[in-house]
Image (cartoon, rainbow, N blue to C red; front, side):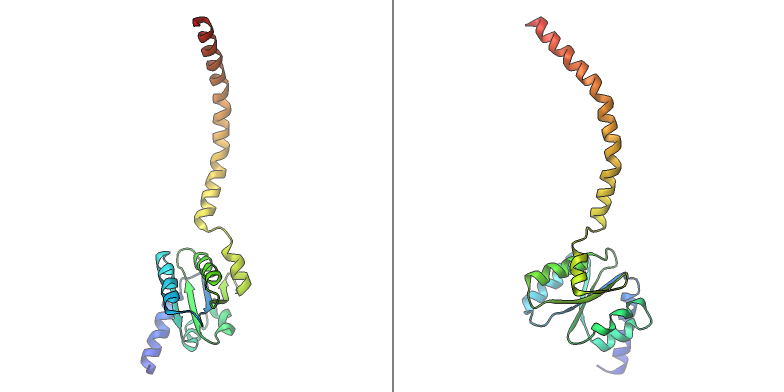
Length: 171
């Protein structure tokens, strides 16, 4: 790779990582080609990015950005994972695959500050944006639903009593 290609790679990496909230780093040594392909397709299916990068190029790309905190982890083979939509999805995928494929090791991440490998696993257990939204929505709807049930209970019981009396008189 000549100097111009390296500069273009650094610039494209800088642009890709410019809008991400979280960047996850993993050591992929020991994975088979099939496992790496499965990993890539799982990331692609969830709208995330997964790439193997040269450490020096990544260091230059994140220089001067908050992501620079992960620079000490850039040793040995490095794969990066990130998502512009939901920052927790890559953590969930990496933790799932690290459990399935023993050679995959989560080095660490930048997510609202530097995170170590075990912290990333803990992050992966947190609910995602969609899960949190549904929980908030369910909580907000619970009160009006309960109030509606309370208002409907008295007329329903009266109706049941009247229907029972009607059956008693008819039968």
